[in-house]
Length: 504
Image 1 (tube, rainbow, N blue to C red):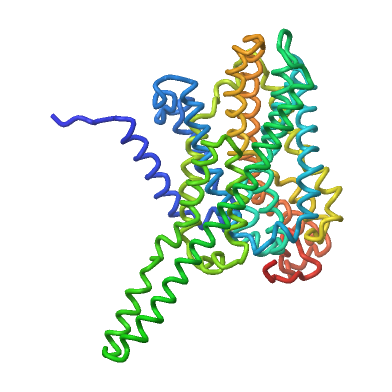
Image 2 (cartoon, rainbow, N blue to C red):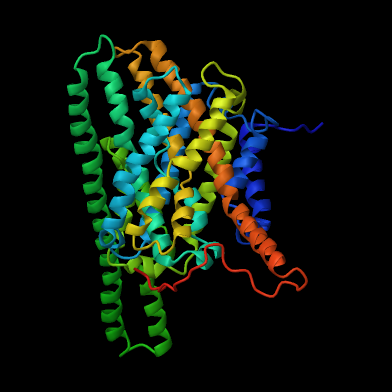
């Protein structure tokens, strides 16, 4: 008698392949008609297939029932996703965009990230009373960066083309790419203070600051920027060199062969020489460069996420590669497949049951915290400074971009970076109970904020469009109670002044 072989490998392949296949059949409907973010559907599917609901996907079992191994798998999966996403983000920006718009980015990244960090930490501290403010700073640092995957829903597609000027889209993409790699200094400032100021620890606050300035800023951040510039520039030059070799060989070969070969054979020789760098290798170059940077930065112990974004910008500093691949869909396809996989994994891995029952944070505290963070973590600052950033033309754009600061893959990445650090503190002077208490509290809070952000920001544009349409409809009916609708609906973020669509 035949029997079913319910191995984990076959189940995962079936779920992942089935979801990508069937969701692809309605992808245009959800993205371009209903304005649902790409990340929402796989995240909800992961929840449905998770141990909390149907138990089809069992991430802990895949990690040999080791919570530490599960965290490590999730850490590396999110690292890979961020690296590939950010190098492609850097490649897609116009030439020298970060250098040209450094003032606008400085406003959003410097005081902007500091505000998001401190405001979130303050909300955590006042609601979760069993942790100190320094411990709250560690939690706030994890959710400070905005998620580049969820941010794509407002910079790509029909909604972005209709409602957001191209320069504003570019500044949102650049900010998201930069701040994902700059989360390390905020996180490790709090972690180093905890490590060196704990009772019985050696060094004190002065040692914590020396470690932060020397190891974190001097080595991990600055060296990653330098490394990204060097690798991106060298990759660009190598690709240019290969292209020049093809051109030189083509010219010399054809000049010699056209005298002795029929024209058809000369054309075939020309076609063969074009294979010096085939199109497939050319298109995959940026993705393979991301894998190389992730691996080498990991070996060196520097910030691979920031290095990938910097390398992407250096790689296309002359805009050549971006122009050559603008009409190709290979890189967006790789991004989409990777994004679906990671959010399906996050939905299945999320500790759903812990939200309802745990020893650290109650459900009402989590709900209040999520509301405060989603409304006040980013929106007040961006709205206050939008007039100083040329890309913002209207107040409505400042409100929208300020609200749309999603928390996603980068938050989970920094959560497990912090978790690994806290596990090491158990043998380094900090009381094991304190480190474990903070670690468990971080896991519950950050996962809950990620889940809320994916749902709220995933449906944010849909509800915004619906509310705007309903408001216009009610207002029109009140003004014209008998006549039907005569005016066309204006875009959600109506542009009063036309802005040039020229590329930076």
